Image (cartoon, rainbow, N blue to C red; front, side, top):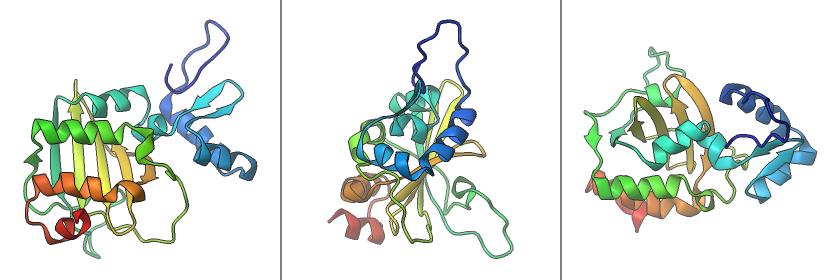
Length: 195
């Protein structure tokens, strides 16, 4: 099981939302927080936590991003004061969805499912995220959304209206911007970031 290794036979797999709540509690513990930031996995009892699994909502989410049937990209704009929107993946879009070419989608899939993309994945930042871009990965009737803020270098993941997690991508900003530039050529923000 991706989210947890259980040593006793016959135990049921814990639902990802329950695991997320446990991890939220665990990661607030100062004695454990550093373990998650400085290694690829955190072990608490029989629970094994890997950042990329939490980030993408467990094995189903990881599979959806790793092997999508299709990927769409959107430009986002912040909601107006009168628009009450809770999640970044529900922000208004600037124009229709753009189908991501297969070679670019494959590179996004590889990068977003690689833990090395997020060496300081959950470091706290004093930033007010304003995501400008979103990718939606589809596979087998499932979807995972990834909203990117290039000002804060943070991405946020969603499954429908459910917020999953977030991660810092500071060290990967140039590569991610270059991939988005292949979808939105000539974008001045992406052009500057991809230099």
